[in-house]
Image (cartoon, rainbow over all chains, first blue to last red; front, side, top):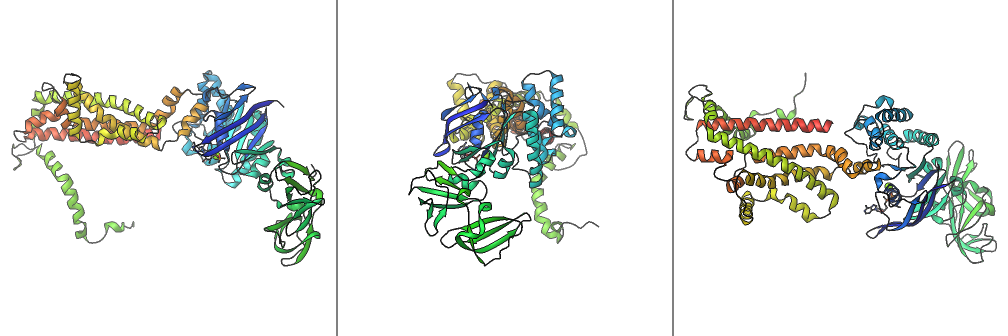
Length: 355
Length: 263
Ligand SMILES: Nc1ncnc2c1ncn2[C@@H]1O[C@H](COP(=O)(O)OP(=O)(O)O)[C@@H](O)[C@H]1O
Ligand SMILES: [Mg+2]
């Protein structure tokens, strides 16, 4: 796939807050890209730079190889769906949607056709004459989406598009967004702080923290091969152990040498071991713990164990009902190949998880 | 049966201060209106209903000139201060962060009229401007603009800048954005500011007194020169008419702001 947008070394400071710290990433033509990170990590700032409402202090942004930063916001082939939707309250739904096409000075006939087409697509044809304040949250969100896609931009930016919706509508809209992106074939960049949302929607995800990009990968790769401690902790549940490489495993103070894929790491190097709960086996292994909590979720059960010498609980996920009881002592362990080792310098070293 | 609100129940005597306050507020106005229809010339006895004083009013040519002058000044200064005040408010809200400039923009609305009046008079003579209706019009624009700026600025304060960004995002130039998005969202504030400037100019005395030319008095000045020799029922009739005008303006203002908000 061709690169559509190429962001290089983009930084932006507000006073002493560094919102973006030398961010570099490429977005490919036609993909569904997600920016994921906790609140305040700079996601909105990056979107606003792409849309043209914010200028970076340093770095470059190119669209199809041409400098995008030199183009004023109203001439960019980029549309932003605002976190607040920003629908014009004094215009009806169809006027809101037609607004962008009227600015392109298209013939009336064509404007009317495209507006009714897009309202059909988002299922709001019956509400064309309503004012935004007469619509529900989900309907407003769809008007905002329609207003942005009717322009057929090269790139559509969506800032937390689903955060204002309740859980049920949200799941529905996630499916709808994905279907829509597939149908219209526009490159989407969606911002979210909800990792499940990013994982289920996106082709690729950039995980951000404190203005920096931590890792860019497909959802499965992000889950299986986190490359920084932050990603290992942020994406899904993980059991994390910090220690030093020693004798083919990781020596963790208080726990001894744990099985870990340390090949390629020098003896004595500092590293972090991450083991997914579903990779931990109960009944035999290097560690011994006491069961403190068992919860049954139908298909899977979650078991929390306290292991002497380890700060938090060790989480274990098992298929079906767990055959252990609270208070029992039990051995636990994992194959070295099932852990992921992250060297202290944040570089990926080795991973044992199957792809 | 519908229950009455508890606040309205209870001892009638407790409500006395409430009604006295209203009497205090509105009795003078009621007396004035009633007396304007009194056939007798003295306010001490009722001589029967008559519209005579309204007829006399129509024949009084100095009052007529005063009224025309006042309308010219009020309409002219309202138009000017609405346009300038709106632009100033938008400029302040969107293009500066200076609190001082913000405060200075609305200062003429708080300044004592006397200070503004003397200041303008000194300024006019410094630039050797002749006095006339235009000098009163400019003077009224100064404080009218301050009121319009204050009202529009307040509305801009909680208006959402993302609407303007959305407009640009959809391909509108800054100019189109101003016309199609900023102005319509500000309309209720602009209408309210304009009506405020108009009603304030209509009966403004101190500043007009200092800045008018003797040959071109405004209505309040004409009235003042008439009442120096005692209040005549003619003046009552005039005041009643002015009352009717300001009521109408207030009601229209309320209707209009509701209308524009619904838009
Ligand atoms: N206009 C601004 N002025 C000052 N600080 C800002 C501004 N915009 C963003 N910031 C700061 O930059 C950081 C990143 O903000 P933002 O991009 O909105 O984060 P996110 O969208 O990931 O929650 C935050 O600390 C925020 O307070
Ligand atoms: Mg944000």
